Amino acid sequence: MIHPLHNMTLKGVIWYQGEANIDFNRDLYNCTFPALIEDWRQTFHLGSQGQTERLFPFGFVQLSAVLSDEDSDDRFPQIRWHQTADVGYVPNRRMPNTFMAVAMDLGDRTSPFGSIHPRDKQTVAYRLHLGARAVAYGEKTLTFQGPLPEKIELLADKGLLSLTYSQQIEVQRQDHEIFEISCCGDHQCKWLPAPMNTSSTQTLALSISSCPGAVAALRYAWATWPCEYKRCPLYHPKSSLPAPPFIAFYCKPDAWTSQQGCDDLVQ
Image (cartoon, rainbow, N blue to C red; front, side, top):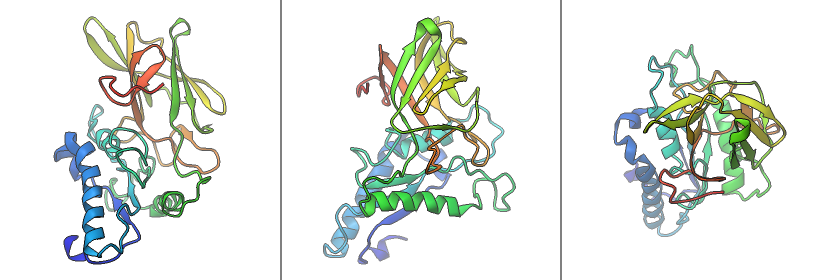
């Protein structure tokens, strides 16, 4: 369906992610989605005899929310995570010159097209246009993505995890379930809620007192339907961009990584 267009000259592409991939090679999507972007870039560049830039901007919408009867279904959050090549944000080393619009907070319970098809496309377009301005048109100081933690500290003596964000955060509401920790003991691990505690302009503390063992990982918004319409707990205060979902694995004191196995440590 795309190949007949390959001789056209493009400025860029916007991809709206569908849900079919949750049951089709889901575990490979952290490879196949970046590979699709690379293939399209090469195909359109060659097909247009070089008029389309080799690394043309590629924007995409992160998978939206859907009502589900399965509380423990993590297929949707896995696809959202894999859309970023398991990094949590774009652009990154594996996905250069890309931008993403988070849509997990735009769930539409009463959509006549089904909850997977939210009617509010204006907000999706607004978030995409911020990414396009920053990545495709080079507005370097523009905020185009929501806040992610840049540092995670385990304060075991206080029963807290301390998160420091790279941007300012606005806590819209306290939530006792949207953050979860992997609590390990007796040779098994279980995901438990980590209730939000105190916060400042760029920091957030989570209570981990429910974990009698060792904390092995932390994740945020790891659910099919993480929150109601524009009611996730964390946003950027000025742009109103939601904090994206993430997962981080504990490797050693004050060292966490987005890659399971601790091969790619981030402080």
